[in-house]
Amino acid sequence: MKLLSIICIFLFSVFLNAEEKKENWQSLFNGKDLSGWDIAIRGQDTNKDLGKYFSVHEGNLHIYKDTHPDEMIEYGVIMSKKSYKNYRLRFEYKWGEKRFAPRKYVKRDTGLLVHAYDDNRNNWRGGAWPLSVECQIQETDTGDFHFIGPRAKIKSSAVKFQRDKNHFYKYDENSENVQLVEFRGRTLKSHQNDYLYIWNTVEAVVIGGNATFYVNGLKVMEAIGLEYPVGEYKRKKKNTWKPLLEGKIGFQCEGAEVMYKNIEILELPEEKK
Image (cartoon, rainbow, N blue to C red; front, side, top):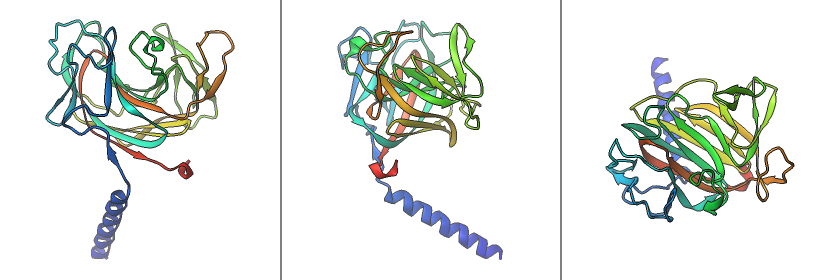
């Protein structure tokens, strides 16, 4: 009986590997150079990167590799040249030792951006962040949502609450309370499952106007019905919203040394919605 169980497990693993090979995962980062990506650093022309914040080292995308720890840095982002609509995106990240002013003594912070929808850098938040949906990558907080322009519905166990003069929502997939989050609203995940100085895995499943984030294999956040404001957003006034169904993919540089590897995408057909 034990031998039969071992054989069944072996056959099942073979089946999973075969299914994985059938899926047409494509690398977004070739481990050699930054082909297919654009760099935007606040205060610099596109693809200037005067401080060489983004580099390739030992097959990894390495942010702030050669930046001196005492240097005052600028924020920026590396963006895919191509837009994507329905897909699964997966990658690994690991923190480095260095942190930089003005975030030298706070949590290490960066982020994955999906559905970035406006190439006009004059409209970006603070001159650094594209209008997009952010999967927060931060010590203890990986998987949190930031809505940098768009809005969406999330399941929350509580009405909006206040912390550090900002308004937050606490995600709860079992809650029947659905909150509409907009204007850079942040949604906190319900538990910690990311670690310092080791490789963590993130997967984003973005299908049209829905986005779900997984950290180290566990689902931590889901947004439903992503929308973006038409024209200039006006706080406390009525805005016109349209479905946000596609956009570019980006990774932030936000004052902490970090490395990425195995950045891959599996584009999904329309019928898998």
